[in-house]
Length: 276
Image (cartoon, rainbow, N blue to C red; front, top):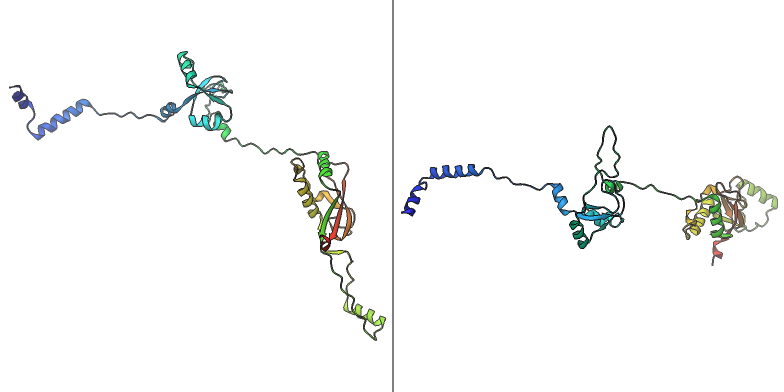
């Protein structure tokens, strides 16, 4: 009888079933889903570390603060800003109810009129910091000492000698006066000196060679030497002390700005075929 009575109470038509189902759904109400915020997810991933230095917006050295594991692994731990907390020590800290929260007000200077909260933390500020280039310039006296130590007394250069033209055979039956008139008429140029070379040895060549000698020492490589600091004392043409165009041994002066005395060295230009 109970089964028959219960079956009679159930709705028999489709419209009744729809109405009953709608009433049940309205009674339950709309179902809500709760999403975890980004800050909550970050808080779950954070680990507790012990600060080794005072860090603004985090805390003093020795305090325990939560931190992102990737930030700890890549930046804070290599920079010795914080240290990891072992699991056994973590249990003791929790048992002792030690405060392991972050102090957002530590190291922050608040204005009386308005307190502006900075978005970047201590390590993000250092991320955008560009360290200026520091150049430790040597003094003129120290630079001259290094030049004197690393530049040899004589610097050799090799250049090709200009070959002299062979004298033309004397013409038979021609007088000396006729030869002079003929040479003047043809505009024959004066012969080049026997020690003339192709090209020249310039102060730029000398500076390049000296820089190569200084490059073998870390301190000497910092010496700043320009072409204006070098000049030939002998062997150069009048009015141009920046180059020599002949074979031989000549003197050159090296004087840096601020130096009292110049450094004198010998420049020896040798024929290229005698290099062997």
